[in-house]
Length: 366
Image 1: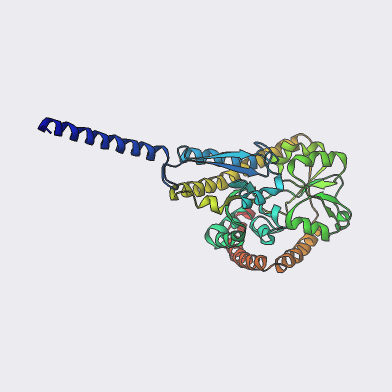
Image 2: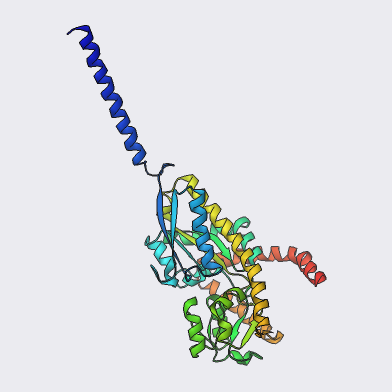
């Protein structure tokens, strides 16, 4: 073979090798390895809320938008309202099974499956939003939460809070302890157990069914969240009396649930983005409720709604019964016992500080 033929053959070989390399590079770019920084994810989030419902529903949508923006589209989350993919009260089960990678709801909705869950959500005369956040993020509560949910294949994160709620809407005056006897009320969690012990009947239902139930007399009373959401549901058109304070829920924390197997497929940067977005929504939702509850209460009063405070003797009895209910509920489940004892000890420390500082400021300011 002549020298020029040898060089030509060599050139063809080099070109073929280079072309094969380009094809391999193209293949790698088109199909990134699992867990690589180039891989994209399309996830589903099921929620317990009506579509774009003020506060909670908007918070879930905000979370999805933040994740999309911060990940530059690498993690997209499609939000499903209650009933679109699964019923409102089956969010936890759907995430546990892997039907959806994510869920957004209130932990006490699944207390029948996870008794300790309600202590990460709300308890009568329990922690306010500041105290709950401090316990979770700085006091060891998050570690306990993850421990409780791990057997179900779910990773929980704080993702919103209502702040202090109202006692609710009633179709009759609540002047004494006896007025709770025979009362049919929509109220979940430990507050519902207190109502039962006071002689009432708990009727659980999602937000979308409350107005009709009140209007038709299927229930005599309801608490949902507070003025912001109550106004949106039109509850002032279905009940005569609006009572405060929200003894049953000084705050309600909402959770982001993530299927652990799905979580483990995310690269570290996307995991960090999910955590950051949840933390952002956790604070932003509380700000939203603080501002909008004030405005909605002003509107309700202007529209002639009669806002009343529960009598001192009623609140005193509710507090006594609540202490019995909370202790009994915690004692019935080993995990709940562990969580409640830990939370209770931390709340005592927080209260001692608040009593000598924040409480005085409120009282002096008036």
